[in-house]
Length: 211
Ligand code: HEM
View 1 (cartoon, rainbow, N blue to C red):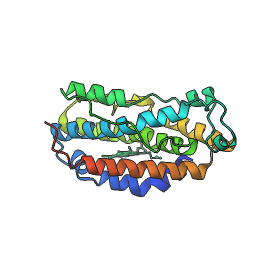
View 2 (cartoon, helix red, strand yellow):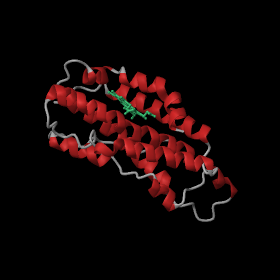
View 3 (cartoon, rainbow, N blue to C red):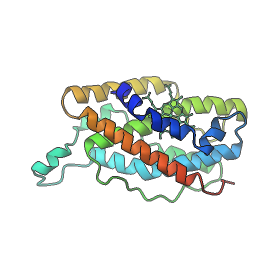
View 4 (cartoon, rainbow, N blue to C red):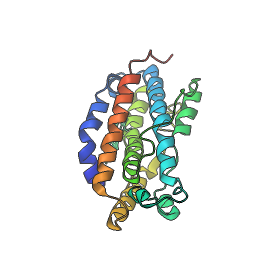
């Protein structure tokens, strides 16, 4: 699943990396203001998407739900906890606070209510971002100094990032093998959510710079 997801979303990932704010962040001379701006952008993305995706994952089946709800089955609690998910929006808010910045005003609402495949595709996107965050963190420490203030989000899984990622992949593969998710649906969901992330980042990037 992870390989297929990476291939399907590669072009959008690259487009995200090429957004002006991201280019400045990963370029030869990132400034502390570039980092604050990145935190603000990512907080708006996570604040908008994460609550909807997490809620959709664990929402109980509606009472009396009939055959129509079969299109959007829910996972058993142990399957959800096997994903090892922890919300990252609070980490971004904490990082903003370190820089004296308030949490962004967000209206959590996306694709509501997303089906299970779309939800897991979206979770792939938000989880994968912390994998790339390791690389971003290394670069920023080189240019801005170590310790890097307010890096809870970038360091989210610490040296467990690769292990966490592998586990997510295994759980997704297991769900697909057990017929609980449709891989094509998850891939389509990941593409849709990644595109949404791109649109949000591109739009927010036009905001005035963070102080
Ligand atoms: C400056 C911006 C970014 C850079 C430089 C970057 C860089 C990277 C790198 C280097 C990896 C591979 C990490 C590894 O294999 O150890 C990665 C993976 C990933 N990134 Fe990003 N990333 C950026 C932004 C984002 C954003 C905003 C998102 C989505 C919210 C995102 C989603 C992902 C995903 C889903 C993967 C996993 C790909 C896979 O399946 O292996 N990235 N990123």
